[in-house]
Length: 395
Image (tube, rainbow, N blue to C red; front, side, top):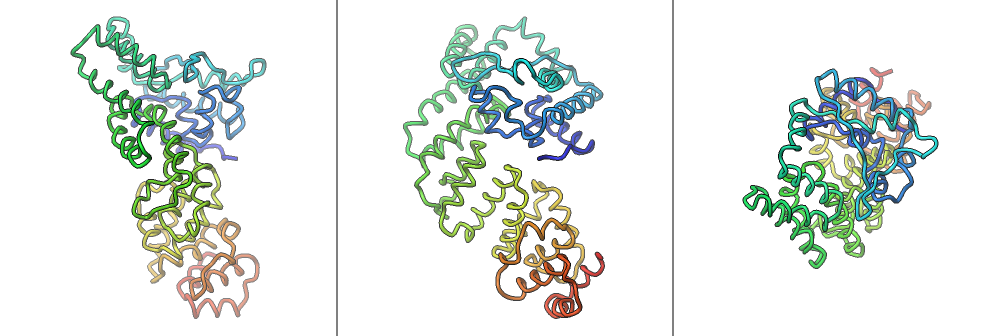
């Protein structure tokens, strides 16, 4: 279960969402907090689950409290509150519930019913009443992201009749044609088409592009189910497509079905991301350890990335490098045994490779697990004197 967000972490998430999306949407915040997976959000929007509360990863009290804190912060930044209602995707457009009819959590319902946007944007939305073409364009966007292509065509036809020179008219037509042509293409061409249409879709639909394209990525993943991983075409694999669809358990299963997947750093990294999205930090740490031992250059390149999703691991990696004791990337998992004590439980000594790196890990694992004695310290001093020095300093 997720821990409650600290104030600093929550305000950073809110700021990021406002920067990326131009507003604070409560459902987007729940997903950014990992309180709600995209796959479960999609199931709720499609009416496959009775209400949102049934698929939250945290108790309703915790989600409601985060939404309330985020709302207070957004309001203090001068953002204006605007009412929200949530409608089902697909043909049956209807309002869908946040909680059970007789016992919905009032704080969760209240938090999900309000978005926050800059005051200037709020005034611009009010001008829609005086601008029919803006209303119609918003209808096109809402229909596309709600997966109602017929409704999008109807709204676009009305927009065309009202303003034949609308600057984005041809771009919407091109996007919808690409969406309708996609199922007839072979998988390799589907992949190319999806990746080609995404920038255009994102320019027209913003972050809601994900809602339009997710089922197409899922369909491609299903079509690739029997295709083995090809290092010359790493994205033409079900694991990649499932991840793009937001279906991380399916992505993980597709990767694990590949023989010797651990020997492929691309697949290990994809597996790692799926485990993180599934809130399985122990499995993610095992993947990081494997990368450090078997693919140290890939591990270093990804750990050096400033936008590493695991911010805590990034800080630990920097601390490890600052020690400047000549330790290699392959020694990072052993250092984590005493720098981040959860490593011992996550990565068993049975998993380590043969050789000095593995021997050092096994020694330290025993030492942090209560079997710290002079013979082990002497053995570690011979293998990795830098690790012993840092271990003793951490006691």
